Amino acid sequence: MTGPETAAGVRPAERLGWGRALATVVRMDLRQRLRTRSWYVLLGAWFVVIGLVTWAAFASYNVLSGMEGIGGGAGRFVFEAVVGFVLGFGLLVAPAVSASGISGDRAGGTLAVVQVTLLTPAQLLVGKWLASWAVALAFLLVALPYVVVSLVAGGLDLGGLVVLGVMVAVELGVVCALGTTLSAVASRTLFAVVTTYLLVALSSLGTVVAFALAAPLTHATVPANIPEWSTAADLLEAGPVRCYGRLQPVPALDTRSTYWLLAANPFVVVSDAVPTPEAVPFDPGDEDTWAPDGVMTSISFGVRHLQRPPEMGVPCAHGEPADAGREEAWQGTPVWPLGLGLQLAVVAGLFAWARQRLVAPATRLPRGTRVA
Image (cartoon, rainbow, N blue to C red; front, side, top):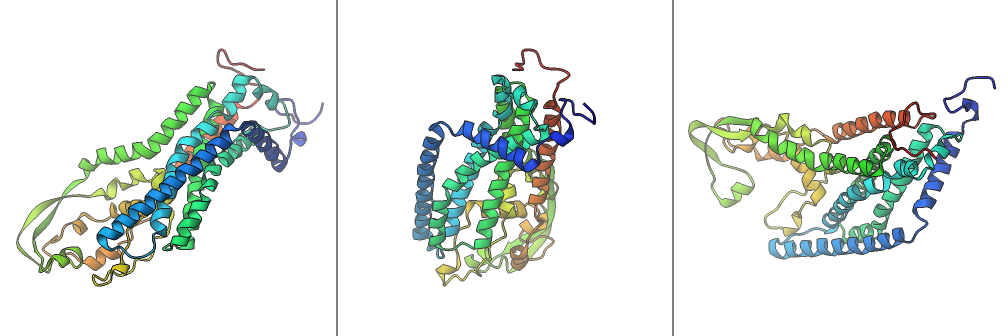
């Protein structure tokens, strides 16, 4: 045998092309996953659950409309509720469908058989990831009929809808990539699944906890005096008409140095990537000029709000009346590129480690590992 060879004794020229290799791995993995009826029963139950969530969102919107005279279409409110629920449930399902892909084959003694084929470790990893991602996306596809319902209800812009759907799919892909790489790194399926869930919890709940713990460290004071409002409407619209009295230090939080802790949160990444909908100028005499923000829009506005200078949260900072127009025009800086970049950096590091673990023949195996 002449020419350069890989560690498994296969010349590079004999390797499969990426297209054929990925198609083979994805097809075999999906056949193994979907050969039982349990997945179809689960998807049917998921369809019913999403229907209940959609009904609850419409009911909530109707209650708000009756109490506050809300106008506009209910589509965006309902759509964001459905997509937010799909994202949250997807973060629970994706680790389960991905973290057992390779470690399960290792435990069953079939991984070694695949490793001595014409597949490269990278092709095996990517193929397993695509298969698990396809299964996770099925839960998003099942929700499409309810997306159509929200479209019929009105109040949705097509561009924002597409971006929101794409970003949910991307986040599911990131979680599946974490699970797939950890299933290659870990020698036990349980360890891979638990570690994936811990990473998901760290990014979704841990970032919120870290931000809350860091909040007292952002304590600041702003010199301000006493605001005066002419009417109750000024309190909600234009702000104080004048400021009087001595300037006193007023406590405030300067979260400009800590808001980035929330960047890697999947809900923040998805919400912040969606273009902000055009806000209709509020007219107190026309109820149709105001509608409630959906859950995803509220998250995006909240993260952008944390980037404001502390003076913007104090009515009479430095003795000047608050400029309501400046607050409404505040856009902030998008944080989703930073968050998605951090997620992809973690995935890239785990991918390099996982690829090294799949190189055959292995120079060292954990005790008790089944080869074939």
